[in-house]
Each structure stands twice: as structure tokens, then as C-alpha cells.
Image (cartoon, rainbow, N blue to C red):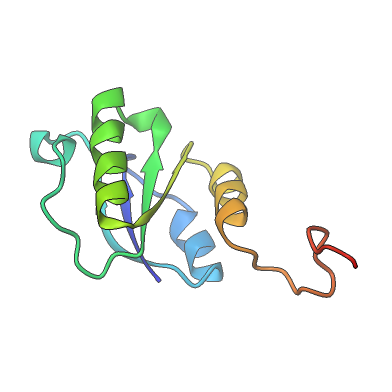
Length: 107
């Protein structure tokens, strides 16, 4: 799975966490440059957009959310921390074994 990251100047340990989920960073933009703040034209090969909310303005987030919805690309909005990103990724995909998953429904 390829991800497009928006926000944050430095990613820290986030690339390592994404690798654990099988996600590769296709591109990362800080969101500071004016061209990063507009609605993107296209993102070929992107499966997931990750928005770091503590580094982005409301309009920038709105542009990327609208684009994700139009292109049917999943997106995650969270703070730039490994813990917050991990929680958000858990919500969109189950990475645990089905036998030990607490979310598994028993019949």
C-alpha cells in the first residue's frame, strides 16, 4: 500500500511504523508551501492519504479530504505521533490475528 503524507517537517519514527503496517511512503509534503495547500491534481498509485492535523490549516485539510473522497482514496487524519497514527491505522484495517482479535464477533 502506498501513502501520501501531508503535514510535518520531520517524520521521526513514523516511516518505521508505516513499514510495520506494510505501507510505503510514496510522497511526503510539509503543507507549508503554497502549492501543497491547494487541492492536488492527481495522485496516481496512492492508496491512503495521511493528514497530520497539528501541522495543517482547516482549508488544507478540507482540500485533501475532498480530493480523497472524489478519488475514492482512504484517508486518515491524526496528530503527528506514532501512537496517534497507530490508533488511526487500527481503525481502518485489522492487523491482528483473527483468532486473538478482541473485535471478532463470536456466534
